[in-house]
Image (cartoon, rainbow, N blue to C red):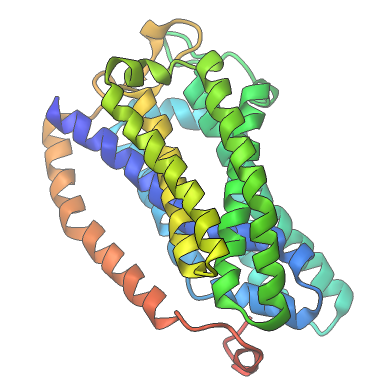
Amino acid sequence: MTLQITWFLLWGLLWALFFMTDGFDFGVGTLLPFLGKTDDDKRMMINTIGPTWNGNEVWLLTAGGVTFAAFPKVYAVMFSSLYSALMLILFALILRGVSFEFRGKVESASWRRFWDGCIFIGSAAPAVLFGVAFANIFKGIPIDQNGVYHGNLLTLLNPYGLCGGILFLFLFLQHGALWLSFKTEKSLQQRAIQTAERLWPIVLTAAVVFLVYSKFATHLYDNYLNRPILFLIILVTVLALLGVKFYLKKQCYVSAWIASAITIVGATFYGVIGLFPCLFPSSIDPSFSLTAFNASSSPLTLTIMLGVVIVFVPIILAYQAWSYNLFKSKTTLEDLAYEDAY
């Protein structure tokens, strides 16, 4: 049982790391048409995430791999019931990656506008769809005792699912604006700062609405009410969100981004802890739900995998810390002259 609980928490942690890292990439890509007044502005925005965006997606592969290896039944049901939404996310991520590479291949304003639109779609769509998917998981998916999904893509676009999509989108927009606030300079930096300040009350409103809505649409609060100490997770998340505003006023933009990162991790764990022990709850009958205990791999598999995680996850974290430190300086107009710049 300890192994299943450990892997449940690791599963949540890997999703949280993905949302924390790739979240600002989604935010920057979505803000591209709005903050990029000139082509140089847009190139600088893209180059702020250029060295890290593909590395950030490693956490998506890791989270998916852990789901497959540690909870194979959940993987099978998730990727069949949420197939349409997950394929849309996949196509959007592919479109975004190709757009970064193709945008500068032809000296044509219309060519660049087309790929700018693709970057926007490839960034905004995953942000919304991940929020919709996880909100529906929190709410419960209509699966029967055989794991068969009784619904379609429109079933997922219910009010609570859309509320989750809106929350994720604005969390990532704020995260991206804060990233640009300390990675750019001059007028672009000022626009990013102003955008982050304007987004903060919207994020706060979306978060409050989602928290209240969750009380009526889900059973997430059952675990919190049974163990009140768990409310510390919500408290830390709220304090981190308030910290974003505090550090913005103090003009400490790196600290504001870190507070935003903690907000995203806390928001993820708010749902994960509320779900426990369910990984994929059924809205048809709770007995049909897939949990950390009835959907996990064998103890031997979980033990071997735990050893692999203990060795390789710190290596990945160390590499990412090194790469972030290597490219910690601001992106300037001079950087656009490099051959490997986007």
